[in-house]
Image (cartoon, rainbow, N blue to C red):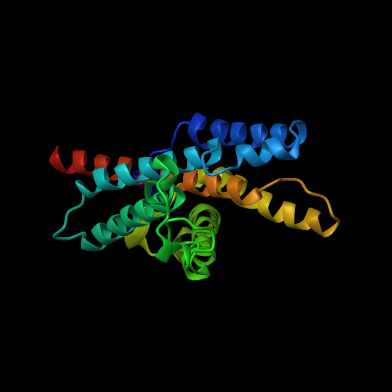
Length: 232
C-alpha cells in the first residue's frame, strides 16, 4: 500500500516555507523600485543562492538514498536516483556558471564567441541546454506534483504499483502550485501591460528546485525506512 511509503513532511517544509517565499516575493515586488529588484535578481542575488543551495541539498540526498538501494532487485531505482543526482549537479553548476559567479574568472575568448552572455556555461549556447531542460523540469513538477498525487488520492489503481516508492506525496501539491502558477498569472497580466513580477523565472526556478529538494528528501526517508524494516 502507498501509505507505507507516505512519510509526510513537516508542514513547515511543504506549506509555511513556500508561502513565506511567495509572500516575501510579493512584498519586494510591490515595495522596491525596479533597479533594486534587478540587483536582487542578479547572478549573485538571494534567489540564485537559494536555488543552488536547494539543488546541492537534493544532490546530497540522492547520494544518500543510493546507499539504500538494493542493486540486485532495484536496479531501476538506482538508475532513477543516479539520474536525479546528475541533473542536480548539472543545473547547480549551470546556475553558478561552474564557479565563475563565485570566483569571477574571465571567460576565454573562444567561449565568448559562442556564449551569448559571455559566461562559462552551456545554457547560453542553445535553447537545448536552457529552455528545453527548464520546460522538461516544469512538466515534471506538474506531473509529479499535481497529476500523480491527484491520481494517488482519487484513482490509485491507474498508476503502476511497482513505482509507488518514487511517487511524490500529496502534500507537495502546495509546492508545485506555488512553483507553477505565478508564471501563468504573470503572463496573463502582461497581456494587459501589467507587470506583476520583475523576473518571474527566478521565482519559478526557486520553487521548482525546492520541490526537487523536498522530493529527494521524501525518497531518502522512504528508502531509509524500507532499509530499517528489512533488517528487523
